[in-house]
Amino acid sequence: MNKEIKEAYDLASKKYENLGINTEKILEHLKEIPISIHAWQGDDVGGFERPNAELTGGGIIATGNYFGKARNIQELKLDLEKALSLIPGNHRINLHSFHGDFGGKFVDRNQYKIEYFHSWIDWADEKEVKLDLNSTLFSHPKADDGFTLSSKVKEIRQFWMEHVCRCREISAEIGRQLKSPCIHNIWIPDGLKDIPIDRKGYRELLKDSLDEILRDKYPSSIMKDSLEGKLFGIGSEAFVVGSNEFYLCYAIANQKMLTLDTGHFHPTESVGDKISAILPFIPELMLHISRGVRWDSDHVVILSDDLIQLAEEIVKSQAMDKIHIALDYFDASINRISAWVIGTRAVQKSLLYALLQPWDMLREYEENGQYFQRLAFLEELKTLPFGAVWDFFCLKNDVPVGYSWIKEIEKYEMTVLRERS
Image 1 (cartoon, helix red, strand yellow):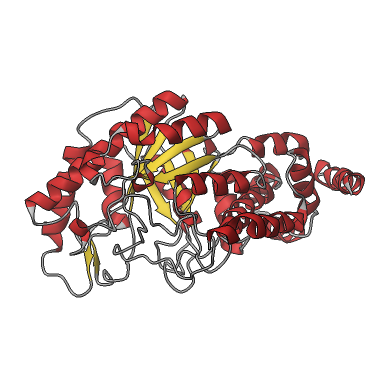
Image 2 (image 1 turned 30 degrees about the vertical axis):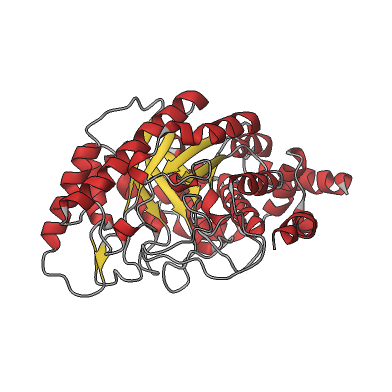
């Protein structure tokens, strides 16, 4: 089998070499593009604050009840290790703050400390992965009315400001200890189901809260803040305080990173098109890659036309050092580890497809007004054997090639996950 994979790769690499593309260099580049894999796929966005915690509020929902959900940090780490063993390359793990190691006791969110994340740091150091962190402003009694940082109740607003400030401190320490900037992402569920009167008032409060939160500065060498907007959520169909426009303006004005979640826009919008429009005005960009079906439904990411277009825009931006890639979906209707593997490998395949394109030649055609040649090549490139290059990439990185990883998941399901149920 290995010989066949190598022979197929050699034939494919020659075809790409005819277009001036060095596949060996491309594979080395791909290996070094980290994807921040979201921990919350493994526990249905429940966290470990309380026993048997489940996702509530926030306009988001994990659907399904497939057996084997991670019930504690040890099981979540075990599942992540299995997923990482089936994914080529070097990656990051993205935590929500309520994934902290609270030792079985309840710790309210304005009391979070770095000590509750030491076990994650030790694990990440041992497994040679880096960590990112998200403030968790949902699934809490103080978020039940749908408002957090923009709440008109000062005490509620203050509680959530304290929470985010604590998460920023924790992120900075994670980044310092792991010697890699921890990206701290802020997303809030704030909004209204029906027509609001005081849109401006809520948004002014959100701006004031963010100004207060971001007053403390941390070196970008240890942590980076990012702000994530949304089009709508369940229960906030008419009005979302933290819209894309709000955070775009805030990020530009304050030179902060902006997070674009591919499920947080109208289905006909191209998130890929937004990259080149935004990058000239902000220092860095975070992408949370999801797959919405008719709405922000957080389906498992697959190798779709939309994903390939997004990857092409990332590569064509010539600013990949300023673009961070993360996953953000949660499907409880299928094996959760498989969801990680399918999504991460899909994103990697899309990046490989984009990296294997002769962009300089295509750009030259465009500059010369040779549009038929440009379009013709774009079509012909679709049938080049990039799959053979992908298989060799997996082989080279000692992970299962093709669909052989499915058997690994099935074995894990029978020996580990069924014991949980």
